[in-house]
Image (cartoon, rainbow over all chains, first blue to last red; front, side, top):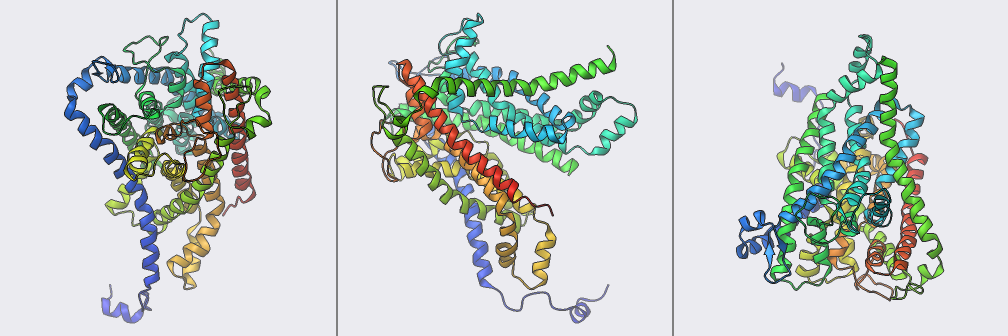
Length: 309
Length: 279
């Protein structure tokens, strides 16, 4: 190793002789734009949690989280959020039961079986499905799926969890499929070739090599799919109804957290009232639930990227 | 069971998984067109809504949706692209705050859209006192799709090989010269595709606009600083009305909305194919 002084003599000077302040200005402006997304998060937290905190000064957190009756506009009012959470989880369960296996199956097909030409047709079609607005799915659930279920002998109410859940499941297939397929695409070719060299069939390679190797990404796609189901508003608002209902019967009408927020926010609720603050208390609950799931999904995706890329 | 049969059944099951989605997509489109086509006429595009389904149209909502789209592009693209440039070209990724920024954007991309509506209600409509106006709706939709635009732009920028940058540096370019004259022009097709797809997602969003207060009866053409309704909201309003005819009117409005979205998507795909480059 030469001494620093010797290096300085031997090599040309690489630093600019004069600091270019315009470059600093550019970096500052770009950084400011990046701060917009930070401000958004801070804004969401302030917007949700300050009114929610005020709400919890009137209504105890325990009553809110354990109460089985949700009737904020009636006299006497009840503020038990469980019926909204049960409605949310029930429709999520129906949607997940459909979207997780079908999304995973579709991803395996796209990643392991489809040739380039088939993929060239299937992927845009999947993107088209993903690009359909949720209000359109809501319309479909209300005017097509519910009558269809009745025709095949399932006695559902006009508004019901089952048809909202089925249609939401279809809406989520592209989310689960494309994220899972990304994870499988990151699995190195060598692993597959090794398994083939040992005499595995295509199915064995897919189910015993590729899926286990991509499992963290697949779980991430499931978690993100469920998080989306919990946060979806329009399908449930249009097709599932607006009556809080603590039930496990998917044929009945029920209300989700999102549908309550939308229905209450659509009316002109006076600022500062307890009814107004319920929007934020329920919103904060919804945000926390999805936030935890999103962070889990982000970590899992990071994990498979670190292993394979 | 023989290996071949088992494998064949497995492949069939996989195809079935995708088939369910596409079958539903097809049924949905047929259902919408069957219901909506008879009501898809000039009056839907040129007349305001009414309590009488025979004369009701969706003109104010369609105009507002076009305004929203324009404002969105103006607001989202510069902020999104600049953020992406910062993260890809300038940020030191070993610093904790830059990592936090990345996780923050990934999380924002998955925050339920209704939560953005609450943000808009609390800060723009009530806090800033902007009121239930179109501009507030555009601003909230901007924040909603910003993560999508940032993520797409970052991918486009990352796809530019380093040799391009190093070549420019070797000729004595400053960092901003490298970015603005080499990296950005090469990344524009990818950025444009991502931005248009984000725009089409925003145009179909309903939930945040409900909280901004777009569910109102509007019979006049909207302005940027005035009350408004948008096409997805108009569909929602039609669906809430008791008469069956309004459901058909909703279907006709859905055809208009899908028409706008498919045009945007086709444009995005065209750009992607037209300017695709391999390095």
